[in-house]
Image 1: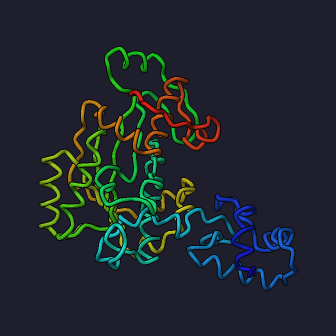
Image 2: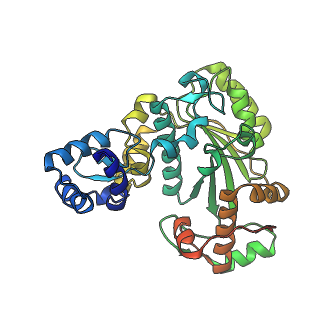
Image 3: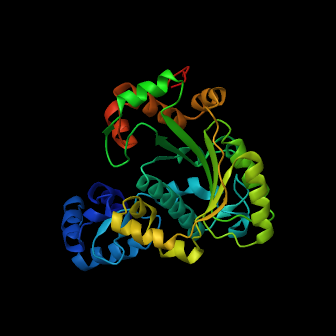
Length: 343
């Protein structure tokens, strides 16, 4: 086994996932040496760290504008779940979704997905990225059934920064009046929309959001074609789908750090990100009065990630507080429900 292959195996056991806790090169060399049977010079290991940190398929990433290394949580294999966010003009034809993507476009799509999720967290929302849904076994029809991200907003308290107790009086009032203490946004994301693809993009968004309170089509790049803007606005207003561009160009996305680092952005880093984003509201999402429970039942029975999210919702309501999903998953032991009932 080559040194590169050895490092791919041992680095995930050593590197921290949060860039704020990055390990400096000298310390990382010493930790790696303890894991390797064969002896290598410091210069050799440092060289491999540097080369691998530039490889999007490697588990090591270098801190932007600083020192130290951390765990790349999104490698090329894991990032393939975002390939449908890329339009044919940004890729070549060939795979199950109609095209195979370049590594650069794939990285941009994952960065944008991380930006949308982190912005949601910064607003007190709880975003759920459906990564496994669009893995290697995904089918074209899945694009019409499942969104890219489900965003949960609690109406009775709760914060994405930690476990926060609900206002139980407000929760009881909402339940007594038949109101749901949360709303769910079904979000489809694209790097760009074009005249020859926007109808399919829009109606996929409409189709896979029929069960949720809100449906949203989120676009990374600015939409500058006036005819395209008017077409999207007309469809959005007619069907109640929100259409929003973040105004992030290809260069903007290329300048951002890797997706895992974006998800750990500090408040200061978020301030810089918001200066980069140029929101363009093309149409507003029109709320539905309640969830489409028949659709919800079908989604939960067909999709493990959707089922896990509803288990988290039910658990939060039962316990009177909301906690980050990662904490719930690690501490509660999620199990599939054979015949799920509405929350």
